[in-house]
Length: 123
Picture (cartoon, rainbow, N blue to C red):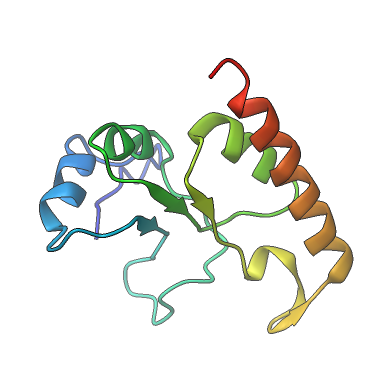
């Protein structure tokens, strides 16, 4: 768990170092998601986390899968900003809890793919 500044929503200084220190094996990638202190839910909060920590973790050689608060409206920004190894979505494409909205899924995937193409330009 990474502490967040309650006013800004940004991770505390040293968050990425804390994440890297907690890795106990040689994972293929690490999934970063949002959890809310005191909430019983492990995910599905619909809240994005501080994407600034992703770059530091990736620069240390650990590919990142991002989750938490992703939806069709923000996935293009997430992919172009963060350039994650992968993305994970669930509640961000639901019509109601547990029921996926096919139109949202399609829009999400199209947005993620287009953003990935743009993010890979220049490499």
